[in-house]
Image (tube, rainbow, N blue to C red; front, side):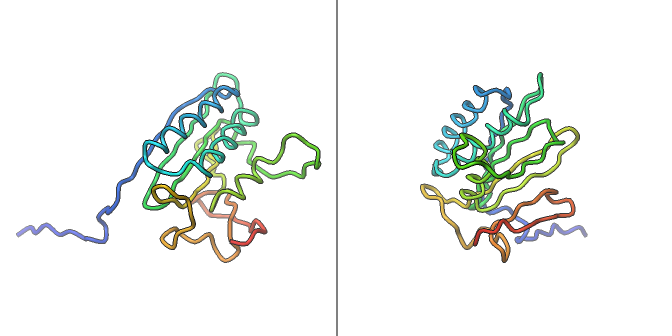
Amino acid sequence: MNREMTAPENELTHTIRNFSVLLSPTPRGARLARLLAREQLRSWGLPLDPAEQIVAELADNASTHGRVPGRDFRLTLYVVADTLRIEVTDTRADLLPRRTPTAPDAESGRGLLLVEALADRWGAAPGPYPRKTVWAEVCVRSGTALARPSCPPAGPAGRRWTTAGSRGRRTRPSGRPG
């Protein structure tokens, strides 16, 4: 009477790898985020560049701008198919990331510009208050990082900046070609 039905299109055909760790919002925590990400990527057989630099920039932003005494930030890495997603969650939802003009001789202020240049896609999503998550995605395959046809497109304008994640997306073009 009861027949078991399966839908092959709903079956997972690849492994989902993930790594998550809480770190102190200090320069030491940001450095540790980069080192732990490097080792995790190495153990998965994935390329270190550009992911290691993206982790370093996002973790540094969390420890500098997202710092709240007594609250940690979280680094999460996961790979689904050919996409590595890097997420850094901090407890300053009131401070969404934004690029600001910097003087040519300034020693800081270019982190998000680097993330935009290195990532295939990046953005920020609000979490349960008081958290926000800044994320970046890189298309990868073992040993090399590259744009792949199997990676979701960034859209007609190239890279996109998303402020609301999957809840009512609001995006604007970054001005860079895809």
